[in-house]
Image 1 (tube, rainbow, N blue to C red):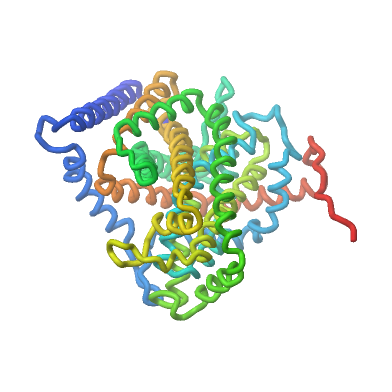
Image 2 (cartoon, rainbow, N blue to C red):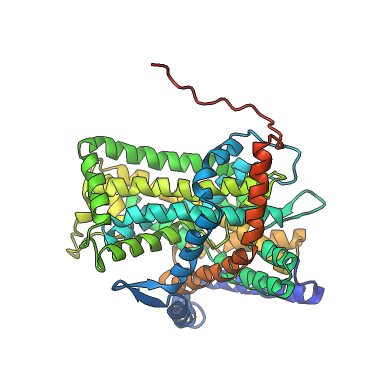
Length: 524
């Protein structure tokens, strides 16, 4: 708890509650007619947040020209530590892969360790927040802008992102707070505050922690996820009942998050494999139907990745497009998923860092399947029958599925719904921890937040998201500034902890609690 003045906390809670109730009431009235001003709520929001969001987006997504292609400075800010930390940690992205699998298979599991969920559950909770619509639509956007070769660079950058996730998850466990009742609070707010204090930068740590928490709060408006899920549902079924769709999402979310991280983890540990499985199986069916041209598809991806005419700006253009989408997809550098990893049952921060390595890797695998089915079906060459232009975003992915079976868009709609829902429940936990960090960790604070969060989902399906997307995206990516700045300061201690962990692992000083069978190798 950072703000320890009771009166200030009370008024802030009352203020947020009033804003929430006012917005909800306004949306309900607006749905049945007009509000008291005679205008739609989305229009009022557009007039308010639109100019602010546009101004902020111009500053946050300021671009510089590299190789004839414009790239956002904030993307470069997130890319540089991926490359630097990969080398600084001695390519932990690769040599940490097998130890990571051993941790996830329970080889070093310590059930008596502090924490609320298993390390596997922490990973699935984090994955439910990152593996989402970006893997369906984001890859298609990369191909539309940078050609098929952009996906090759998207994969390369995602591998580099593993080093940043390793840092975030290690620090999240190392500097988490374990409360008397066994619950855990962790994430960037805590490792920035306590970690920088340990390195002699206490004031800077508080400033960065508060800045991070405040910038996270607008993400309570998960309108984009709800809106995109409803859009896919409407396209597949023809049913356009936005308000009731929002109500269903809110109720389902409330049923899950009312039980806290343990209930969220129980859902995500089943939902993530299910939703990824449905999507991957559907993708593999598309690949199987077009198996004869699979080698050609890989050849196209590889050739256009290094082709000087792949995209505007040549090879550099393809790299930048792939880099931009990889940064957006993995969210490495934003620190949000480390909040889930902080709840893992472990006494070894480095072991959770190793678990975090798998996050960008799994995220990339889902994206890679999307890329292959788009290229193998030629969907990136399809034209929109209305505009006559090449398809973009999720339309391209949907067309790739539909080219095999007419009903496959229904499968995609189901996957999109589950991706959106899993992202919503994960983010509810992330923002809850930010909320309690700022306003106090009391039962009343937690319950009021959960109700507020669920109610705010309802208007997401009916409002015009373009009015708030610029604003939300801008503050979202600003999280990378305090988070990565703190990681730069704490990288030396992470490397020291990493060396100590692997030395103890090699010497057999880390207890093996479960024998893990080695994969059987068939004899010739």
